Length: 402
Figure 1 (cartoon, one colour):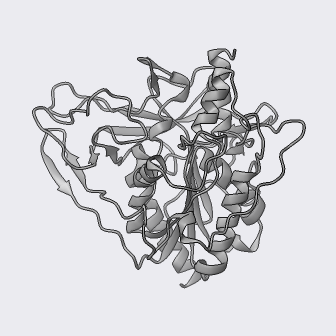
Figure 2 (figure 1 turned 90 degrees about the horizontal axis):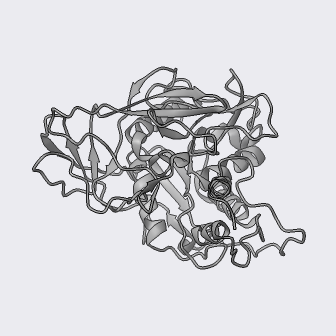
């Protein structure tokens, strides 16, 4: 039986928090899986002009001010956006096998709504399905009764799929446009591998507007912005810097990573390296106010509460998202062995607005502090990230005169 601490560490490794985003293979690896055909529309969650398109969804938000006043903020995508976004989703599949199938279920459709669709105001959206290592397999490993394949068979399949999708997009749709890579957790781990193998120092690097690698440990030498996982892709330090990466893992500022967390720490085999932290609310460093878009009810990937949150006293939110200006702020922080985004809730019990947010991993009423705010890494800074994509896209177009 795996001990709880070891189980948590195992899960985090499998979710892509280090270079080994997939489990170690058995002594005799399974034969490679057949390649997917990404010319088939069914193999994409989002592709401009194709139906069905998971990115065409209701993103209306209610803005809740500190005094409890509410206004509705509509959302409109831009089908003529001048740059593209290519997204790889995190570990969400509940398929019964070690690797997911290529049929989108509610969990894939839902995570696209919460982590990608809002970028549609600034870029065209491309999101492939891929055969990911599933939640089912993770849970089987934690329980000590791994299902067939959960020990590492075909560990190359998820990356193979992402690379095939990327190659198809480049060959058939990019046409010299700038592109932002967006991922979370297992998705970020796969994109890190893709950048290493196919973009860093390669011709495709000239198309890279930026990479948003959320919920993963992107390694850099301590005190530097480049030279670890990537050789020529630095961390982003301004809104007009292009060809750079944003990476962070988020924790509450009053609950930093405990010793058993794998988030925010380098691999033991990487001396001199630290996990990158770029604050989306203040790229150059220091504190910044987060412009988040949180799930208004219990429909997010972080649905842990028994009932929908009350965002303002005696009021009900009917939109799928809420924005709470001034409630959240963040800065990059460090504790022995860890670098992370410390999220502060500016609670005021005297005002009419909610004094806290959901987002912790809660199992049986117990908060798993080693996970931090992993489930809402994207949510807490979504507005900042969308604005960054807009400014970097403009800078890329100016630099390339497109």
